[in-house]
Length: 275
Image (tube, rainbow, N blue to C red; front, side):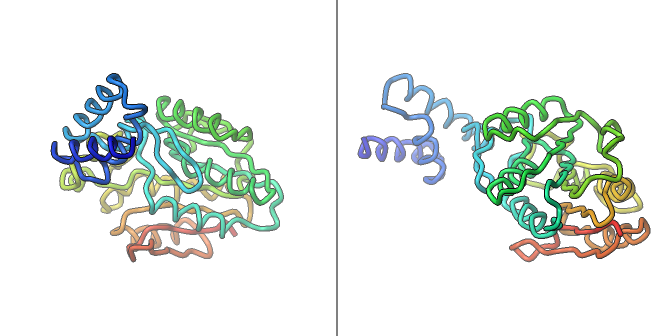
């Protein structure tokens, strides 16, 4: 079978696939080598050659310790967002026994579900409220919660805080978010493969003279009232937005503000607290 898989991989490479991606597709679709498996494999290869992201073709993708179901209804989980989870775990108050986490723009559920799962491994039972404007995204997130047996999660269709249960106001320990932060003009210059992902999860309107800043500004302007005293916001952003975010956070009363680089050395993660 190994020799057969090697030959099939070589065939896909000859069609134009990168060898690594060809191997992944063979491992995913060429099970047993039956004729139907070969047809499925060639169909998957055709999709990739047409430009569709590998993650959507396979239908699942790793994010930290989780294997998440993903498709065109949600963003593809990315390594820099895995770093956000590390930061959030480090910022969460160790004295909080049963933390309440609000994941804004949850998409596939990657951030919130990873946090709850990893806290569970530490013996900490966290409650997750996962929020997204897209009903389709919430369907994917719910499926991922079931897949990973995250039983302390609820899901809310809401544009940021607009329809979140008011009883949570002032009680949240940790808000996490990877909001849209790409400007419309900038999006046109990015890798065409991004056109397969949901536009509303990537592109935000400009605000305050800053590109792609509208959703970030909304979270900064409304987030404090949802956090308990000492609660923290950890938010991903674009690599050109640091100065704007730090300045706007100061006008809104955020305390202990820091902005961190990702592992590639790019400005990426905002951290701010309620006093």
